[in-house]
Image (cartoon, rainbow, N blue to C red; front, side, top):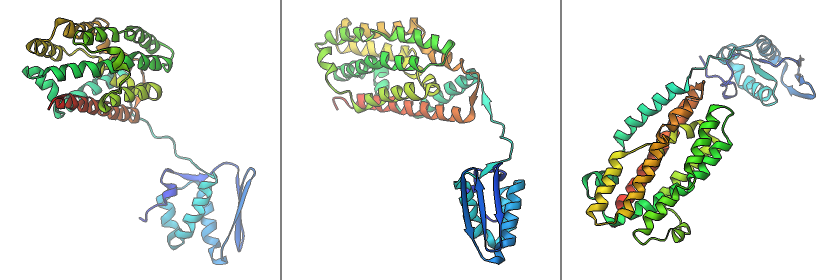
Length: 321
């Protein structure tokens, strides 16, 4: 079978749109639809082929069958079909294909399993250094400074997500999430002050590129892709007791004051008490129908966020080296 025209690739049963008129003559043909009309010219020997093409398009024909029937005439037929398609004279008579879809709760389970598999392949040297007690003072301070930039953007991201929320339960969830994000950076201000870092001055500095990638990605999703945001939020909100236990142990080993590490643990505790770690499951469960295409998209965004977090971890590991 000869390859079908690229112009027909998205038709399964191409046909003239209702209301299209055509007049095939000895040396040319006219095609019209509403106020639009155009003519083509050809030699008389082409009349049977043009007539056959029009008859097929009147009844509806698959692209593969059309290329076989026209044989050597197909190069000319392709040009004509291209024109008919470009001017909107064609439609598809085939019934829409069934779309595979899942409930949001099932999608959440897919996202969670996908994340666990992906994390197993992504290295996290700073997190490993915390677990091994090897993280140094400059790295610990850098982590809180960059985390301050992330948390400072949290309420803006939550506000955008709430503004774009669908009516119903998801809006209520995002409203509570927004309320829970407001003012959290004050805890990090206290943490930084304990080691002599002025948070007011820090606000005037640019975050690392790796930090900026995290916040901007979340902001874009909040503005444009609510479903993908729902899938990704837990990555930055879920409890991570091993990480924070290691953070506290390293701070103590480096002789850093309790006033530095305690606010970080307090902030984690606030998120845990507010159950922010379950935000993705709650939001995704509000979607009764998630198509296969949407699921693929949100998994890509989830992996992209995991890569952003990995880059952030690696940047912390390079501090002081």
